[in-house]
Image 1 (cartoon, rainbow, N blue to C red):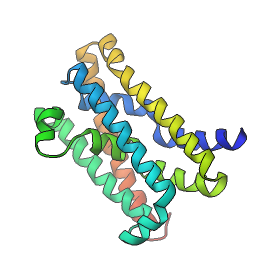
Image 2 (image 1 turned 135 degrees about the vertical axis):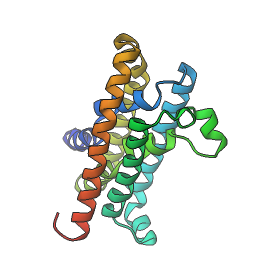
Image 3 (image 1 turned 30 degrees about the vertical axis):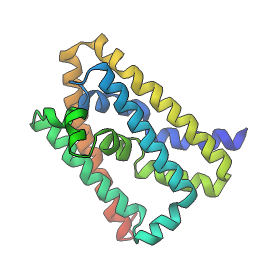
Length: 199
């Protein structure tokens, strides 16, 4: 049982599911219940699919594409930075409406919620480390357990939003966007330092 617990905890910390809630509320504040459910399932499915692929073929994929985790940090950080700036400055309804976004062939359930908010560079690194330390089965079990926690938490997030009220929820979403920008800068910085061998 110990390997399962020891592989679960680092991934749980890396995903930071509680930190996802205000960001999730921010990008879904104008969606109805059905849209949010669809988005939650899509985000969890995307994150799980990417995580399983990384678990079984991560090093191979990185080698074939010629990328590293540091490249992923910089790319993910830039995506999060654009999202946070958009949330802070603009009031973009199309980006928050999955039906309209879906017409363009993309969805915020895939990017940025599935990747890189849920399954970001820290979570991917944790999966690779856990696989080396504990093997495939404990890592896969911890991944499934964490995704279940993420799904339940995000599905319950609108209830928290209703309790707080629209004004408080919007204020928290704006503050979360500010922190999201800081996280994005930290990811880019960590990626650059990793590339230069200073991390």
